[in-house]
Image 1 (cartoon, rainbow, N blue to C red):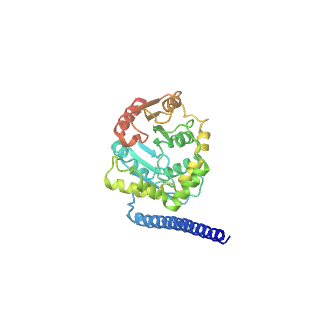
Image 2: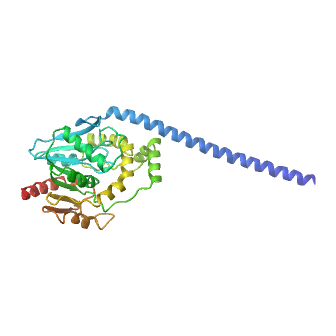
Image 3: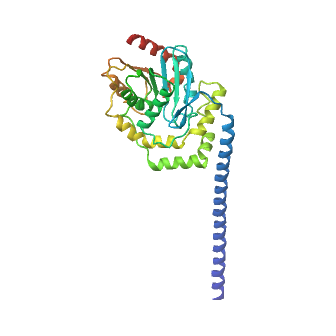
Length: 326
């Protein structure tokens, strides 16, 4: 009887020891995780502060709704081209650099960085198409730019569709740079966006970018420009305005489905010949110009950021197109 009691006591003691060891291991892991997250958070703050000091200003500020919108102007041509960026392009004026260099000998080039992009302020206004279009127009009005070719990349194809219908008397032509079409969109889940917000606040998004492939390294820019693009990528990726714009993306696209480009507005699309996701890319663009008096779709062997590698071809074909319609 005594022997059995001793065995039970011994087994209980061993069980308690194992449990305590497991609890200590779990506790140590939790402490390590907390320390790791704390270090990532602090490093992110310090990096943000350091990078803000190394950020080199470009362009000029225009007051819109009491906030600063950054605009880069280059070239002195008689005709003006207004460039609008794709969704979440961290530094539009830098990203468009190859295209600006090809356009500026012939046109006055105006790159608008909407709120939350590039060196522009953040805004509290919802990122609806109506607000975004109105703000861009206000910026151009503030610069006394009255007549221009509107050139938009990616999601600016949807904003541009609304824009040219509202300000048809100002826009000479619309140029799409692998521009989005309203019929091709997807809905982003709220849980995904909440996760993205947390990654941004915690600093883990910076760590992920650091450990992942450097998407900027292979781009056709000088080292100084690449460094500035990296700084602005860390600053603007997943910021409050970009997240809000993504939240509104589905409704913005849906609202544009019933819209069409004005029949007499010249339109030319420069798009990738082989879209990696959908086989409707070319047909949907062709449908957009079907009823246009002056409509054209040109395909290039390029990726979505077509302006980075096909800038010369884009400008040559744009100039030829504009001569044809004049």
